[in-house]
Structure formats: structure tokens, C-alpha cells
Length: 351
Image 1 (cartoon, rainbow, N blue to C red):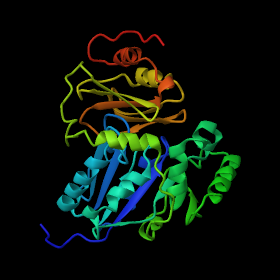
Image 2 (cartoon, rainbow, N blue to C red):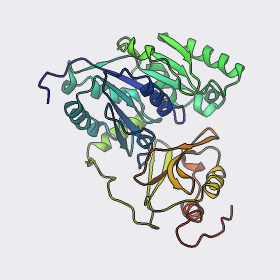
Image 3 (cartoon, helix red, strand yellow):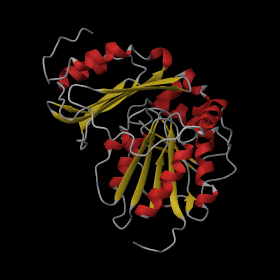
Image 4 (spheres, rainbow, N blue to C red):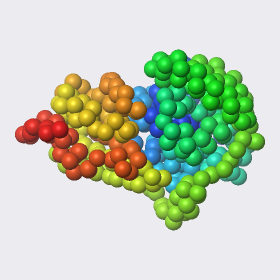
């Protein structure tokens, strides 16, 4: 193992509200990664099970670590430091990429990255916020404190889902970002997550003068987290066939509902997509599932869903995230999902 001191490792932070396409963009950047570089990617999820980490294919030159169960900025801030120390010294990356939860506030995360433990080791580069132009059509999103703080603290803006946005939505998003202070270094329209790697490699240092106000909700969660100890590897217990493990959480006005199934449980893909597509449209839905058509990744944000092939084989996972009033009844949802399982007698789904 190298004894050269760690120094000035570039850190790239990609923030953005729920469903803005952060994981897709990072996956596209990995496809462009210089061969000589080793990257560490730290993925934070508000939900209780790690699904975003399952979206990355295993490879020796990219180490992906998931931290589910809350926001890095508050609930997991005290876990983050120990996790980073371990990752940096074990893997000695050339570059560190961090994807906070869609409900995460960057200020608390910056406190950790700029703390004494990482002085001279980490060099924070431009913070990029991802913005789906259609999100601005929703008054509740435009007025959401964390949504606006993410935009205010960013150095640059990637307008994601631009292939799905109307010309009017793109113009409105441009006007919105141009009115932000301080001015952004760049604003780029991104289709299918294809951000040029040059914007990452040539990025400057984060501007420390950007607004750093933290909402009261995040502050209270961070204070409560001081009393909590989170153990690494907590999700290693393997579910038994036919007996899904269920988790739920509540914070910042949002609820999460999660399940994990044994890899031996196989779902009817047609049945499964019918159940998921009929869930309330305001739900953020993502999962990696073993189906009769192979392992599939299901991803839905703002009502638009996609199904693609997944390299994950460890277990099946599904996560629902929504404002509390939009979350469907847990037992009804689980019953509908279980009815799609091909292991044992399959019953009719009554939706």
C-alpha cells in the first residue's frame, strides 16, 4: 500500500431535488472516466435501503459506497466523516464524487468536507445542482426551502431531462437560473444525463461566498443524530425467500417506504410494472428487482417511468418516497407487490 500522503483530492458534489437525474448523470460521467484515474463515488439516499448504489456496475477503478437512511447533511453527518476516512485511506482515489439525497442541504455536508479531518486532503470543486425544468411548474417545488437553497449554493446548474422539457420550460429554467445570486459559472442543458466530462475535469474551486443558510428542519435532525450510532454494513442481513424485509422512515415532511426480497423471489414483470405504474403519480419510485425477464431497474420521477437491465444480483429492493399525505397504505401496496411474485401461488391483483 502506498505511503504517500493524501493531498488535494478533487471533490465533486452533485446536488438536486428528488428525481432530478443525479445517479444517471454520474453513471454517464463514469463511462467517460480517464483510464488512469480511480474514482470513489459516495451515494446518499433519503430512503432506508440503498438502491442507487445498485445502479452502478462493479468495476475495479470505481468504488461505489451507499449511505442510505437519511441526509448526509444532518442525519448522517457524523457517519460521513468516518466513512470518508475509511474510503480515502483504503482506496486512495484520484477523484471523489458525492451524490447527496434529493432532500439534502449542502451546507452541513460542506462543514464535514472542510473540517479539520480533511484539511489539505480534499479540495472541493464546483458544486453542480441538477434542475429538471418541469419542476418549476410546481409552485410547491419553487417555494421549497431546500430546493431553493440547493440552487443558491451551487456554482453551476445542469438542466436535466432537457429532452423531455418543452421549449417554454427550458426558457423559463434559463431565466430562473440567470436570476440567481451569485451568478452561476455555467448552465448546461443535459439530455439523458450526458454532461461533458470536461466540465468536471476543468472545474474550479467552490466559491465559499455562496449562501450557507441551513433550514431549521435540517438543524433539528442534525442535533438528534448526535445521539444515534449507525453501523456500517447494517443492510447485510439476507432476506429469506417469501419473507420481504420492510423499513419506513419520516423526516422533513417526507415519508419513505422500503422493501427487500431474497434474490430467489422472482416477479412477473408485466404484473409488477402494472402495480408500480398505478401508484400515485407524486411518488418517487425506484427499485432493482429479479423478474421473469431478468434483473430490472425501475425508475420513476415526476410520473415518467423507465425499465432497464440491471447488473445487481444481490437481492430485490424497492423504495417509495413522497410527501406524507401522498404515500399509499403500506399493507395494500405490499399485498399487490407480493401478488406479482412467481414463487408459490400467484393471486389476482385488485387495483
